[in-house]
Image (cartoon, rainbow, N blue to C red; front, top):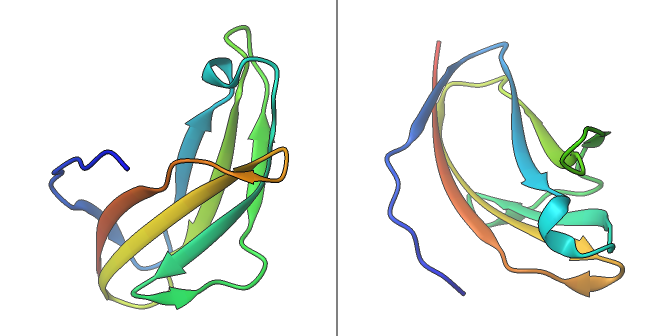
Length: 95
């Protein structure tokens, strides 16, 4: 797993956040689902949206910010049933 150090993103309660995974780098395969941990707890049936475009489009995990706080995400794409490389992300949600 590659480790990247990133500053936390910021959002406000009521915002919708999309974590995008480009399809172009998957060489004809598709992201069929996501495994998502938020603050160490597994998200059941994470919301997913697919967009298409000239570059192959993206598959997005969609998070609704309903409560203020700091959220640690581990988002793992499932690519044709196989686990892809997880991404780590921090989101600070303000009231």
